Length: 371
Image 1 (cartoon, helix red, strand yellow):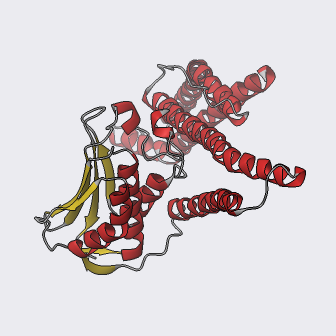
Image 2: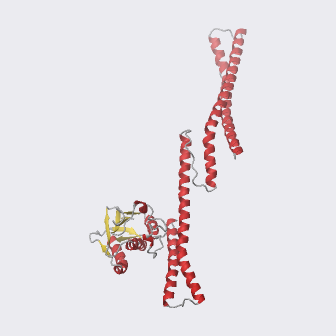
Image 3: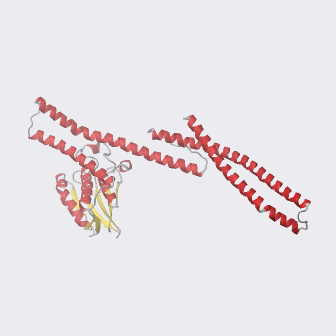
């Protein structure tokens, strides 16, 4: 690696020196040719006009002196320029070699999978500082992607472990005759199988949406129709938990251009999440408002609430804020991730806010009012 760095620095110095030499030689040749072709006739004409006799010995010596002085001047200028070019090349090479070696070394470490590698402050000029900053930004993003990938694989393994363990236990019990295949066993096995199937479907949905392969059938719909449909779908589940689901009567008949089924999926995911974290006797409210360009659908609850740290990760795959939030394992943990991907595909935004623990949560879905 050290030899490669030295070869790189020598190559850079040689290329700089060769480039400057080519420019200097081209300039010297141009000056020499112009002086040889244009200079003598002009000089000769001025000597004649100054009173010298045509073809006199003095005139010949003066012209020879002019030619020799021109050649010596050009030659000395070229030599001094080459020396200056060599000195400038040496200084620039020493100034650039360190930062470039640092960037090269960091790139090699990054290629080996060491995503925590960063280029230190090079302090060698705006261009190199910009390069180092861009490299560090790229490395930080790659590190974030790698962390997300590792966390996703870990969470996915965790999500799969529970149903697989349950299915394995029932299989072993049935094989050993400890468990009989009765109605209770069938319900348990069907529940774990459904959970695996739901997890697979959810992962496929979020991958499809985030990769831009989500097909949308955009049509004009009125917001009250969407809210009423979501309310009717969830009303039975909310009643079973004694949680009130209310549609704000003040919600105006605002139009939106959306895929009704996909936005229905978003509202289902958000309402399911609100129900999961709202205690018996609580209230969840659906409302909407618009400004002519966008329509904001709001789902507000008076449930557990969240901290700022939890809000920062709420739309990540498989995220659950704490152990209390993990008691209800009916979901796959990526419903809000799918919702964000669907809203993004519509050109909208989805955000979540909360005043704090025990103070409820507000999820805001902004959608375009026009095609």
